[in-house]
Length: 336
Image: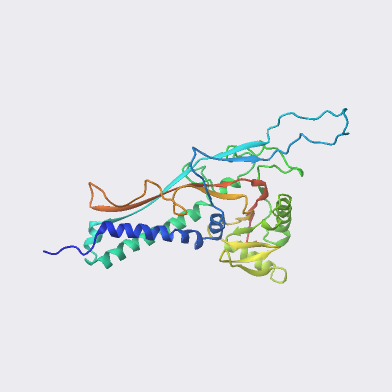
């Protein structure tokens, strides 16, 4: 009587380790935005919601004094910290091996391992693409989805993280503290059109001590190509490769511009994001950096089906902790 030369549970256990070992590739070989953000992902040890204390109100209990007994000091209490909150978002990935799959596979351990690994690799690739797309999305249409770039860069009057742009007032130059720089009128892809916002954001970053960390820009390739064509005679726009990130880009006034095909854009309304990397973080608990959810299962056979499954769970959300040091153009036309 023939016997199996493999243990399916053992193979699934090995595949689980393979998936965990391959998780770092989800952060390195995807898109520029996704990789940049995941470089600064932050582990959070639970909580009902993701809460960030915003220290946006400078103290008013200070001032010049005479140094005599005639002075009356301001010792009034002041609310300096305002909480911003977002929901945790939950995600799972799953693949299965059916009786039909096994029946069509050569009855050896190597063949079955190849089958399960192929399904695992397909899952890893799908997860990578899912997250990369999600980072540009919004939770407005689907409250279960990540609060992506569309939410972070929402227009005035739309609440983000529980706060309206009017809730935190304005900064020293009159810009709203809880709103990115948003340009909906510039259509021509040119240095002259982009430079004013770029310089302003670099100045804001320098006031926060991050002059060298304005970071990067992302758009669809069509926008970057149009910019290159318009500025090809300008020697200051030199091709650059950020070896740490691993994506080719263009250096514009010290800020690297990357092409990212998941970025929004079509017709005459293409987006260009200008991002301070210290301000946009991915908070997570399960599914990243080797911390697995207790709900993860591998090699579980469904009791009422001839199927064995692998399931992995992820928890986290994208969070912009300082919207004012970022900007976006929303109406660029690379064909103009």
